Length: 425
Image (cartoon, rainbow, N blue to C red; front, top):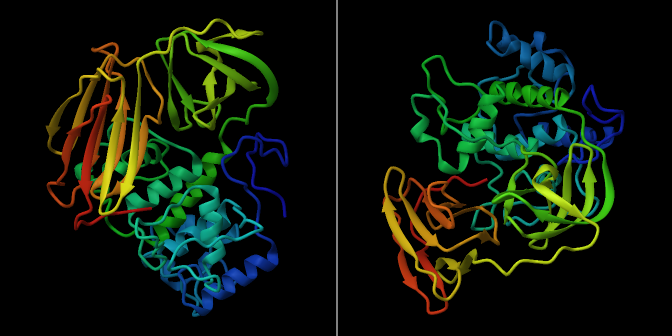
């Protein structure tokens, strides 16, 4: 079968896409769906009839979207002829649906890495495909929890990662404060694209389980988002040196501002470009990874220009030690750290003066020991100063930790593992 591509894309043109969008082979898809039916999965192999033949869809608000999903072949009903639109979706079922809808193929060499996913499970290869595509993670205890129902903010994170969407700003829901910090960017991105919406009462209900009907709607709209996405830029090899011309420039995971940030460089930094995209982005090496920098923010040189003196750099690392999590901030020996504890939500803000560049990712998702995320910023009102914000979860309240100063320009935040409720992806 052919690939699922944009109407604007040439057939077979997948360059630069975050996931490999191919259909499962008919045999593999048949085995997958048959196995789901036997186990009573929500996305079961059932009657080939259209959505209009499901008696429990008559008058349902999502009947049209479900008909579309059934017609396109990636969602079916139950053997008893029903669809059960309001039934909750498990994590295993959600990845099976997403993989089928976006044609994400399992790797040739499966690698089941979760303790609660056995090679013989019907969802094993689906979990493996989602893991290889980068849109799922497991829990800190090494489990995937395939039978756990997915709530709305978790589903938003999964789909936003799959579509490579991120957003900044606020959402105007009455219960916006209940959306986890780790899910805000994903929820905002999907709401801005109208892939997800709220309820008539003005709420989003982030912790409510997503239903089969809601899953069908958001997956359909996610597919439509890809169909209307701009044509992927062409990439050609180059070998030039780049000098950063602006004060602070982001390095991103792909050639565009919609891709996630890997870190930052500063004015005067020298980078080696490996490729150039038709939308004016350069591919560069960054901290052992491949990143992209906007072409209008750099100056090209055929030979490397003289490098300026090494700036005052900051590194932020997360170390997992026995019984605790350690966040280490490393600067120059004379770095003077200042910090402030804030509430609603609970967070620790560390101010680091004399910093001109951060050599580690600006956003680090942790979701362990009560710590959800670490965000590093350069406040506009304080040039040459970095702000590192440790965002803690809602449970427990408060999260307990201690701060230690090192002797070599290091500050350590020690967070013991503690009893808590955590949503992980």
